[in-house]
Image 1 (cartoon, rainbow, N blue to C red):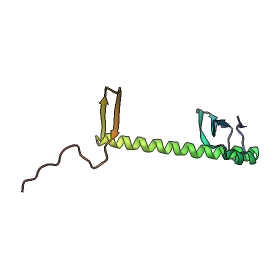
Image 2: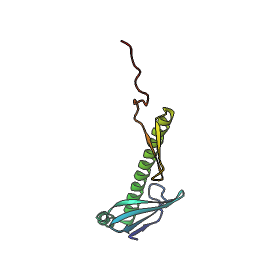
Image 3: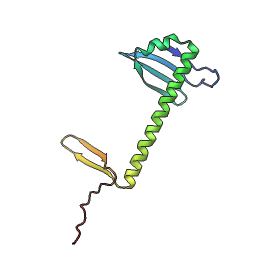
Image 4: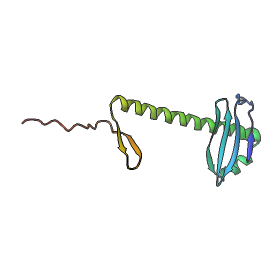
Length: 125
């Protein structure tokens, strides 16, 4: 563990967030404990550690707080977008599957909108 930053208050309420920065191989990871449980994600390669080390404990805490919320918001936005895309594809019956028993898998994908599985109707001239 490189830095341990328990919750604090300083203009905003941060009591429910406990941040730890740890090194895993050549990367720095941010571990977060909060009311919803534990989460963690890769921050950067180790070069970012020099920046964190130059900050005061209070400044480091609020920077980690901002980074966590940016990551959390991005994750939520991505999840909501993917859910919306799959719901729309299901409503339009564009979800396709293919079983591959020899490989023991099932492939699932969304056909692009506007493509139809039906061949075009023939038109008399």
